[in-house]
Length: 303
Length: 278
Image 1 (cartoon, each protein chain N blue to C red):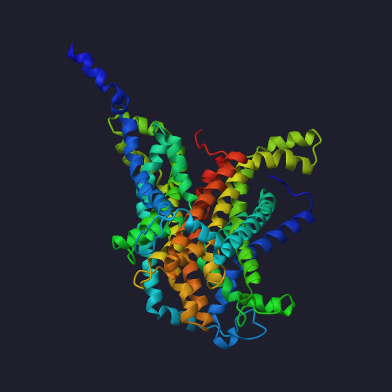
Image 2 (image 1 turned 180 degrees about the horizontal axis):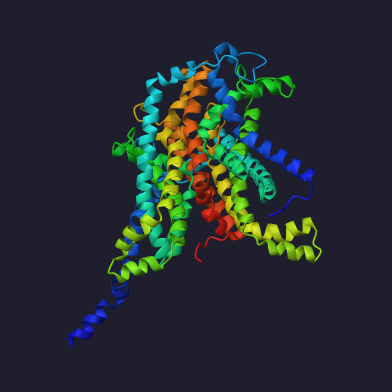
């Protein structure tokens, strides 16, 4: 009488406790999940919570509803950071995609010196962003900078590049293009190499011209690689901080520099900066959801 | 893959390749040139193309600066510890994701990957409050902990790709011989995946070495600041000593460039491991 009842009680957990492979898997996953939960997800939740209070850097304060967000949108510097981040993201990612795709298509062949190209691709990528910002700042500088000198000699600019915010913005975009286009090309090239050559052969026999082969074969089959690369770059550009901070010597405002200043420079602005941090998080999430749901990016990694 | 149609196309192609390679490495070459010339040559107008009076003065300046030395040591400690932690957490998680069967596998995978898209700035405000409460501000851990979490997707992803490649028979044989899942992982899979572990280690180290936002938020004390935080500050310390600023940038970049050139094949296979499958 007792034996069957015991088995019945254990049954909900039976499968889990009996399968040692599954149990081992949970133990192996747990540490990674725990640190992600504690260091990334909990702080976001706490940040959202704080954003509804009149907090200072030292205390939580009283509930204020959406007031922090209202003050955020009324803040001139925030609007400037938002505009700059939008312009920077759209223009730099677009340029990187077009140039990166062109490079990938061009080098998708066997040729002498592939290794050299591959090495050249990785050089800008390996630079710390903040150090490449310092390097370019030296080249843009009006006393010793080669770019400022050349632009001046050609009559393209009237004053020093570093004291004009529009020129700084253009410079920031071009530096980002310099640094990350090779990486974009690398990801797209890896995608191109998975497209079977037979498809192009067959299309050629059927009389498809180069443009048709590109739009009917290359683009559709490259779509997964394109979406991954572009989403990755978009979200990276959306959180731009290092480049603006070091290259413009804190002149250019982005969403991230705005949050940073509220946390470490002018802490009176803490509640508004914290609201902006929440804003950055949810807009980034929306961008990712847009890519996955609207553009149909595949997220499953299972075979 | 395309093939060349005629010799004109070959010339055009190589012109393109040369231009591309030059554009990639020009800034490093130019800043290197700025770092080895005398002050008067640096300010010369028009600028010289080939350095006329090479000097190591700028390098003496920065290597004589204790802040710079300390920064290099701090960067090594922070990036090294981050790499070790990431390899630990990442390899066990990647093994489970690549080889074991369990529920919610794809949700776990998606969550870990989502962290690589995470805007780091979103958590600096709450982390600042929490780190201050437990006294972590201006310590190495204030940088190592967030860096580990943010580099974890990269490490896990690369290791996952490598573990998947290894033949399943190996663990099965080990298990037949009486090994547990963990033992099979530790004694059979890890040694075989050593090249993958090495690739993951290089990429994680570069990631942590290059990190700036977290370090600039949590390390205001020169004793723990990594070199990425120290160098931009040189612009205010060595206001007009552009040669010293250039030398500092070169010193931090050259080891990475060498690392990347030596291990380029591994790095590219690691970086594109996931993206291809999409």
